[in-house]
Image 1 (cartoon, helix red, strand yellow):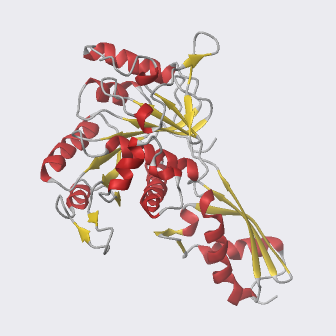
Image 2 (image 1 turned 45 degrees about the vertical axis):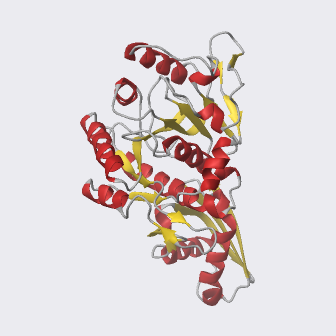
Length: 361
């Protein structure tokens, strides 16, 4: 049998030992930091491994199998690896307000026009593509955009019991927005406290069902809605979306400072419209400057979760009500998948530093 003992327990122990130093595919982190082994058995020329992940990566089952085959084939003289992969999200929320939701993540920006809502929608879909149960809450009471982005502008929220609203389901995730409650041509003319109460109702009076993640598309700025979500909701952390442009970076810094003041962990920065890629030659043109998001992340000692291109297709997808991530295998979807995995990893790391958070189920 070579490298491993015939003992099943020993096989599992040594497989785990071998994987400790292996990086997880395209993420420069140890394999066992995000995936663990529940069992490993070798029979003849086949190694069978059962894995459990704490990040949504079920879409990577085949690449994981290929990685394990390449790793263990020369050690064991095997010709096949069978892999099962299951996903269990860590629980950060222990609030009675929304007990069925494990993690609540705010997607925020210091100013409008940086592509925050588009990013929130596609990151939510990327988490779902990896195997997570995901909801998307549109927290922009004055300018909701999620209904249009999901092709649901004419949808209206219903209730089965006259008490709880039923979310509108699109592309495998559950969405809720004030846009499902008021006509799209009507303006929401409310003072801050009224908007905050409306948001609380959308969150707590929606029948979300069991969710691993609730992604919240925040309005731009640092106003009442931000303070409501930060102070009254069991938030796991916030992500800042910015462009490399100095004007956007200055406002993004204010957003980070606000979350720091209200003790909401900033999970990282996403640099949107990072570059324009020529469709003819592939040349990258940094229209709004270079590395601004990376410098912002470094200054605040948070990770840069990813960079997204400035491209017409992403805008056209949103306009058509079919977000880019619905074609999960496209080139434009790849950065969203990487961002979603990086976000999940950072969430798990952050949860461990918060005393009130209970990990596991």
